Image (cartoon, rainbow, N blue to C red):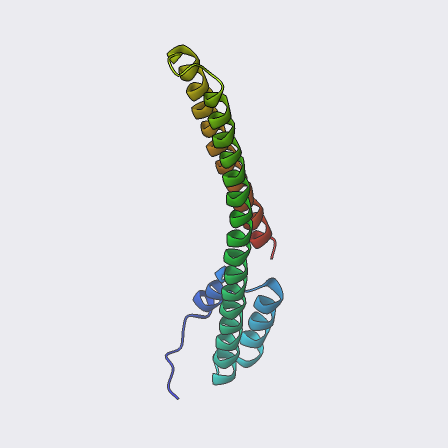
Length: 140
């Protein structure tokens, strides 16, 4: 197989700048110095790159699954709280004079303020999940 020889410094830079783990980089740099730009070297480089790509794809899939699972739990909890608020509004409206628009307005204002708080709570919790997953992924 014919391969164009790369500038050794350029090839070393490609290795050190790659997303491979440090141990893999050391292995490749040692192999490059020992064997040179041979088919054995390029096969090993390719193997390591493919292994790392596969590993990162698995990590990504696991991260997405974790996010979806946790977000589903948060959504269920927020929806339960929203349903509770709606029931509370219905009970409060049933106990007041239908012509008491001031009291109705107060009830609805409180309801919408509570809904806004639930939306903020949802957003905060989702951001927390994303932050946690991102930190976890960066530590791998």
